[in-house]
Structure formats: structure tokens, C-alpha cells
Length: 378
Image (cartoon, rainbow, N blue to C red):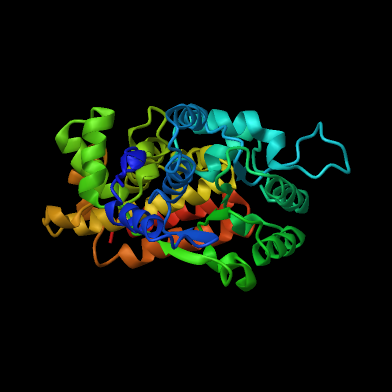
């Protein structure tokens, strides 16, 4: 048995080997819970494992070819996807959204690759800032789909992405299906936060823990799949820290971090030059970002403060910056030192907490900017 079905997976050779061993030894549990940090490839691996299970025992070349053709578009009748959804304005007041309502958007997302984030999915659905959940109606749909006979005579697979987003009623209904699973049915659950699942659900699954992707594997993939030159691939792979989604984000033309770097540079230059009016305008610009983006920006600022402090030790192996970030830090890093790093980092941490609790963003960021102005001179 080989692992050709997993050729699109970035790294994770050990995880692939474990899945193949479970198959070879006929020890596949009825429910696998894929766990691991963001961007390690949990969903991509679960999807490829589903593809493998639905084709591996097909001895008839025609049946194998047909199954492979369907799976190339992720439309096999025995593979049922469940994912968080939102309620759109056009839906009736009594309608509880289910995955099938967004099937076309889902397949569009998958056509772009099997590494993606909830933010990308929300954008694909047109969700804006809405909270995506898995409804009780979806759990009913799962039970119905799995009650049907397998169309191909093999496994029926229920692949559930982000089961922690099941609402209480949906979770209880899914639990009943997990307790008495239909014959020849396999559940593949992919979670970012296993601690948020009902204990009764996790107890009925076998955990499949995945490590971060090795930096060398990310670097290799950037070079071979994305045409990135070796030096930039090395830098991006280190910054990605085992997260292929973050690596992809770094090379995206509309990379959000590039915008955050620009805002970080503006803040630090204007603060050092005591340009109070410019700092006020800066805070007004940040106010237009929206709370989730503001929180992501503050997390980026915290990383840059840490990287600039470490840069002063002149040990490149300790730094994790892109070329553009280092170009700025080369002259700026000396202003982040033991006299101010704790206070500046504390400012950004406090601001993140304030924003998450719905504080007035314009006031928060203007206050932060004025305090940074004082701290940079220490």
C-alpha cells in the first residue's frame, strides 16, 4: 500500500504513515478526531484520507477511475461534508441553515485548495462578521445521509470541519449518531479547539494528534510549488512556524501583514518624531479596520516588538522576520530595549483586551500611540 493519495500534503510523513498503518491493520476507528495547531494540514489530511478510503479497495479499474474522477471535484456520493454556516438575509425566519445551502460556495473553496481558514470560508459565504455555527438541522441531515445505503458498496464517510461550532442541540443530536453509528460509516472530525467539544463527543472518538509542519517542509513546498527563491522561502518558512496557511498568507498579493507592517512603521516613526496630529490621524485610520482586524494587528505588533528586541542580540537564528520586516528593523530595533519592551508589549496586550471588550477603538489606539511616543525615548 502506498501513499500516492497524499501527495498534496505538506510534510506530515509520520501522520500519513500512521493513517496507512491503521488501514493496513484494519483498525480504523469509527470516529477519528484530527487535532493540531492551525495550518498543520488537519483538514487537508482528513480529506485525502477520505479519498483514500473511498478508492483503495476498488479492484475494478472502471469503478476506481469513476470514483477518482468524482473525488477530484470532491463530489463523491458517499462523502458527506459538514461545516459551519450562517443565516443569510434571504432565508426564512424558521429556516435553519445546513451545509447543503452553501454547497456551491464550499466546492468553490475546495477548488482553490485544501488548506484554508474559517476567515476564508466566511468571506466565501458572504458572512462578514457573522458567527458561523453548525445547526441542529445539520445534525439531522447527517443522520439522514448516513442512514442511506452506500452507493458504491464501501464506506460512507462523514467529514465534519470545526465540530466545536456545533450548537448545543446539534451536539446532542450528533452524539446519538456517534453512539450508534450506521454500519460501514466513518466519522472524520477536524477541530481547531478540541477543548470546546462536549466531553461525551470527544470520548467517542479516537484522537489523531498532528504536529506543526517542519520548517524544512514548508521551505521546500514554497520553492517547488510556489516558485519562491530559496532565501525568501527560508525566511517565510521560519515566520510561518509550522503553519502552511500563514506561509500562503505571507506570499499573497494582498497580504494583510504587509498592511500591518506599514501601520507599525507609521506608528513608530510618528511616535519617535512626536507628531501628535499624525498619530491622531493614524488612530482614526485604524478605527476603520473593524475589531477582529484590529486584534490581529495588535498581535502582529506584539510579534514585531519581540523580534526587534531580539534583533539587538545579533543572533540571526533567533529572529523570525521577512525581508521587508528586517529592512525596517535594521535601523529601528535599537529603540526597543530592556527599558521599554515590557511597557510597550503591555500596551498592546491591554489594547487587545480592551478592543475585544468593545472599548472605543479610536480612543484606545490614540492613547496607545501617545504612550508609545513617550516610551520610545527611554
